[in-house]
Image (cartoon, rainbow, N blue to C red; front, side, top):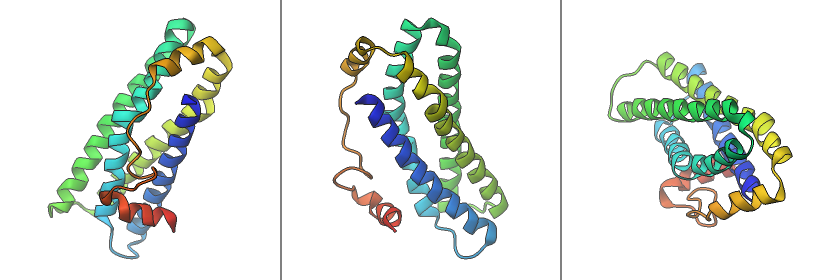
Length: 179
């Protein structure tokens, strides 16, 4: 159940990253006005969900992996460092968007570069977890391992974007994703 939930969250994050990549193409081509508030909402959602719900859930898996399969310690250490680096990158990019929304002048090429780095790093991380890490956990974990990690995981708050009820601040984003 926990693994299924993590896969689902990765799929949802990938949808958001595709939306950001579409916004990046618009910025690069200068086709129309940049939707800064929409980009900011996507980044805030990713930041909040990752920090408060998604990574803590993965941490349960990763800590169990190290405790019961110590030969995987370097992999988990690398993942934890990547999570920290992604959190810092996300915060930095969110700050840039906040400055833009407060009328700071940021050249579009610098914004495009920051957005590219943000999307590429996030996408690479998701793909690595999906391609390498989660299949390894699936292969190694026994029924006892799954019982142990599932007992540590408690259903979290409903998802404010992909849940049954979309929060007001995410309504425009939900509409865009439905297009």
